[in-house]
Amino acid sequence: MGRAVGEIIASATLGLRAGIVAARAGRRVSAWARERDPEALARLDAAPSDGWVLLSDHLLLLEGFAADVGLDQLRSLARRRMRDRAPGTLSPGVVQSWTRSFAGDPHAIGRLGFHLWRNTVRNAGEMVQLHAAPGEIVVRFQNAPELAASEAWREQIAGTSLGIQDLAGHDLEIAYRVLDDETVDTMLHWVAATDSPLP
Image (tube, rainbow, N blue to C red):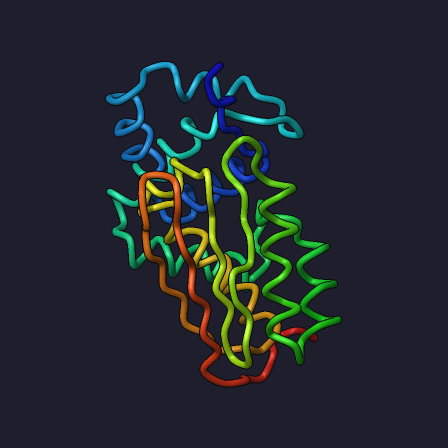
């Protein structure tokens, strides 16, 4: 019996596509994806907006976007889209409520990541907290081969996390360490508190 196929909520892919369009990279990313899997875009187009899509199809678009704009820009765009609460960002109501309620507590804001992971992906691994201390959290993604294999996905998650912390007024650094083909450790280190842009 093999591992179940990884899936991601379709709204995450819609948000990714909105980011690709905003960056004016739609044609190039579509062509890149078609070269690698001619059926992926059709599968994504056929998915209901409130359903699930194959994680591999989502990552194909994400990898194409990263190839077009670069990993640093991908992280920056994900951060800005989350911070600006752009259309298609993940759970905008939950994120806004959480960041307002826990703006003074970076660890509480960090726990939002667990909620988003559980509600955004399935059969894509587990996220567990390994360590929490003043100014830092270490999180492990285990049984997560897609995340271990995709630097673009790690950078998008980092950018999204940075955007959430921006909303709460925290300045942090994020680093990843791939331990093996299914395990990734994430280190979050708070640098300083900043003024939250939330009203």
